Length: 437
Image 1 (cartoon, rainbow, N blue to C red):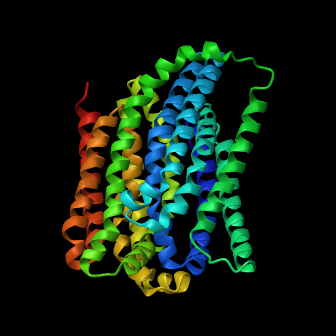
Image 2 (cartoon, rainbow, N blue to C red):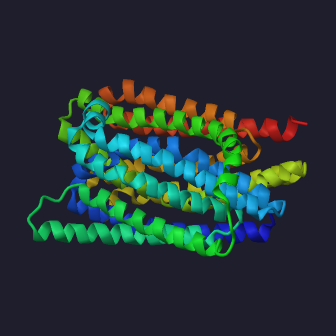
């Protein structure tokens, strides 16, 4: 991949990501004022369940499709690329539909027994309808990423965010006009509507892209084994990390109650942390996330050409850039955290959390790029071990420190885990680039 293609793709993804984050940021403010901190907590509580289902049904297949399609396009085998796309999309859509069926008809079990919060049952039912739609537009995005064309995925991302916010606002107005209590359902409902439009637009675009080009579905079945072989390790990795992350998220409200807070208060604290403070800290990571999407295939190409010096130079530049951005953000959030919490969210606690979280910025932003470099080098297992270690550390802080010092225990756990993760990634890359022959 040339530098021009890399920077162009990164620029397009960054612009779309920044616009999406800006919209999403004000969307969080809107939600904090309409459904409150407790409503935000309920909404965030179902996110691990969504991530887990997507890990099973979408994530591994999407990455597998990008790799396999890119290889066929490089060999000028576009018909095979289309067959791989149609097969992988059918697999992901089928798995997602089955998962949606299970989730919808067992929403009460997941709400009460898994999430330990009966109020999430109605939200889970609405959420279940999203999975087949997410599978469709995720697989469509994978085809365009394989072609190194980021315009369509960026446009779909931006359109999805705009429709999500607009739909939630319309639902809010409808609830008010009919004297219906405004709950987190407006957020989940808005998300469902946005997925419907995003999937429909994606199908239209890919249909036009394939217009006049025949693809036999039965011939496509021959690629099932290849897709499965590539997607399985990626799926297992994502499932493990998502499971651990879900355990972590579910434990936080429970441990806050062990600290002495009531159920509603623990959800309120959790909502302030995940719905207000953390999204603000993650806002600048749009740049590093966009670069990481383009970085992985670039590193893989360099490795195939045995360009160790270019890999070393790229890794150093990326690390330096991410750490510099993180240090600047640390200074900004530390100095202005309390002001931002009151000005944006009308919540002093959010400001304190923003200030505490500011110290993770250099490590958090760098880790995104470092993980992408490891994946580009084919070291997904090593990356999995590192990330698992980080999550286990955070879970330990959740179990043992939150009951003693409250939510601060989790904030300290995040900081230590991100610092350790950076050290592990850098050490692994140092050995990989310098010593591996």
